[in-house]
Length: 71
Image (cartoon, rainbow, N blue to C red; front, side, top):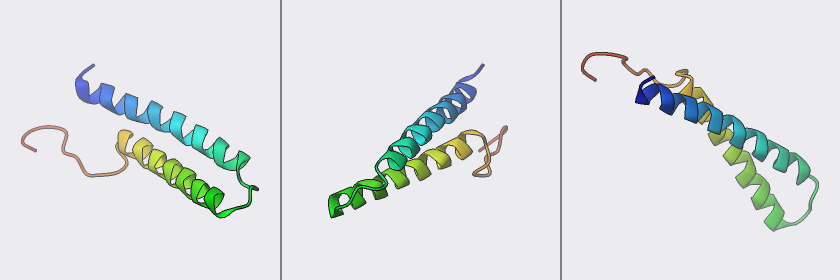
């Protein structure tokens, strides 16, 4: 296992954990009123979106990265 493979695994596992936790927190906080809570919900949604992007990047779906030779 090289450093790149470990980095991809950590990105995928960390992204899954963050996405699940933020989605559950967003679901639990969905019906709360108030402007401050609306901002909090927006931040949770953006955190979940960022975690999904991290999962896709770790899985190699995003980006066109050359695996060998000169980068």
